[in-house]
Every structure is written in C-alpha cells, then in structure tokens.
Length: 439
Image 1 (cartoon, rainbow, N blue to C red):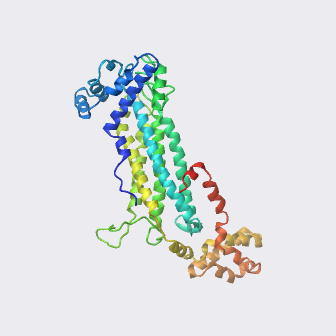
Image 2: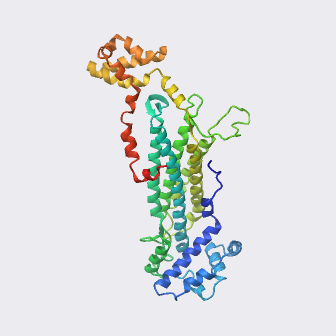
Image 3: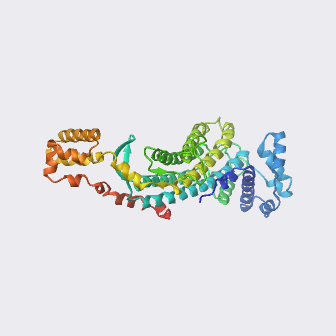
C-alpha cells in the first residue's frame, strides 16, 4: 500500500530551517576555500563549524528592522562567533550566498524528483511487460482505429518517462552552478580561485561568467523541464480518465475501501486522482512565464526575480513531487479489465481490419482507388447493418478476388497486428535506464 503524501523531504528542503542551514553551508565552504588557499588562518573554518548558530525567530526579528534577510542572517550567526567572525562573508555579496545556496537546493530537489521518476518508471515497465500481449483497440480522434496492446500503450509512457529523466539530468547540470564573484562579477574583493574552491567543496561548478547573479536562463530551463514532466503525467492521467469512462470501462484508477465517489450518487467511481494530476500539470505550466521573464533584469541585477522565485521554485518542485506521488498511486493500483478490452475490440464489427483488406485488394486489383472504394463501402454497410466486415466483403462480388485468392483468413487475423511489437519492446527496454527500472 502506498503511504499518504505528507510533504516529506521535498517540503522540508524549502523550509526556512533548511534554507538557513544551506546558507551557513555556503559561508563555511567559502571560508574553508580561503583557508585552503592560504588567505585565511588555519582553523578558521573549523571554528565556524563549531560555533556558528542561528535562531530563525531572531533572524526574522532583525529582518523586521533591517529589511534584508542576508544581513539579518549574518548578524545572528555573528552573535555566536569570536575572532573567526571577521572571515564570515568576506569579499562576498548577498547573491554570492543566495545563488550558490539555491544551486544546492535545486540539485537536491532534482535528485528527489528523479527518485520519484524512477519509482513510476519501474511501475510502468512492470505494467508494460504484464500486458505486453493484452489486446485492445487503438483509438485516433477518439474513434476505433486498429488493435494495439495495453502493454504497448504503457511502454510509450515508460519511454517518455525516460526522456524526462534525461532532461532532468541535463537541467540539473545547468543549475549546478555557484558564484563567489562579488557585487558585479569582477572578483574585486575575492579571487576566482576562492570561487572555484568553494564550488568544488560544495559539489558545484563555478559559473564561467556572472554579474551579481547566476543567470536565470538556467532556472527557466529547469522549470520548463519540470513542466514537461508534469505534461507526461497529465498524458497518463488523461488517458486513464478516458479509459475509465462508463462507455469504455477498460481501466480504472484505484478506489480504496470505504471511499465515496459522490455526496449525491452512491454509484459514482470518479477518476479523482487523475483529475488532480491534470490540474497540477496546468499549475506547473503556469510558472513558465514568470520564469522566462526573470531572465531579463536591469543591468548587472535587480531583485524583481527574487520574490517570484520564492514562490515558483518551491511550488514547482513540491507540485511535481506530489503529482508523481499521485501517479505512483494510480499506476501502482491500476485495474485493467482485459475482458472489457476484448469486448470493445469486437464491438465495431471487424472494421479495424479495413486496411489489411485494402492492401490485399489493391494487390489483387492493381488499383488502390478501386480497392479503397470497395472496402469503404463494405465498412459502411457493416456498421449500418451491425454485420461483420468479413461477411460483408465475402458477399460483395466486387471483392470476389479476395475470396477466390483465399486471402480472407489472412486478412482477418488479429495476431497480425502484433507481429513486430517484439523489436519495439526490445529497443525501448535496452537502455541503461530501462535496465535500472527492471522490477
């Protein structure tokens, strides 16, 4: 049983406590870098680790007066320090601290999301293999097309989930960048060597060039990737919603013991988890416009992006984390009605064999146009009279060539649609990530 979502690590990652701990992590790393390079006395970073403390309430109290969160933080930390205090934040500007710490938060948030992607990926791979040979009707424009298997449908979702994993890894690398270059990126009061060493200690790369901030195209790209991942979850959820419709009834999202579907109609079993996922995907996309507008700032930096990021970055990660949790519940508890799939497959009176009939008749008559007219006419007659397409074609003198050539059995062979699915599964499941997702 999948546990109820309680805003675990992802929520705490964006809390005030974690934010200030990450700031302290960056400040100590910068002093350690100076010490390693010989510009700070030996033991300074150790003294900071031993003595540095902060109290969130005290930070907020000071911020209410100074209206500057970094100054309030540094003031509170400094209250617990001795001589090592002179090395705290030396040569740095606020954004050196903020953007480098933000990079750590983003990298860690990406890793949490990637873990969620892997969990859903494993469930999708399992579902694909379980229903590799479960036939169902494929639909285009919402109308019966040709047979597929339910495993093929879920394999497509699995492959898309892998692409989201790859995109997330690339976006993670783009935001895994810190900067300790000073007020306008000139290293006027700290050296590039200190920046490089600080970032190395923290597991980050140093921005090749910066002004007062790490450039926001990196963050916009990441939010685009999160929105794309949400769109994939929406694709899955939207399809489950369609397949759960009363007229289709092939697949159902899980329905817990004691769950109620409607305050008025006791018979209702609504796809509420999938509907919630679709709504969250819309919310994720809504963050893209402000993320892109954060790229263009005045000159070397203003703070118009700051208030926006305090909302959209935590919200995007927490929203996607929750949507992935919901998807895990849906995919992990999905009810698949193979008998209903078979019934729906046969409900159109064999019309899905029309292309096979068209190709065979074209070969025999030598004219695609003539063959198309015959098969289309037969299909329309089969639908109107609720007779099978095979029977209508067998009785149509214009299609006598099919009967005379003994081609009807070959045309109306369900397994012929699945002959080449083996290689499709093989190439999708041959990647390193797919092998990792093996349950």
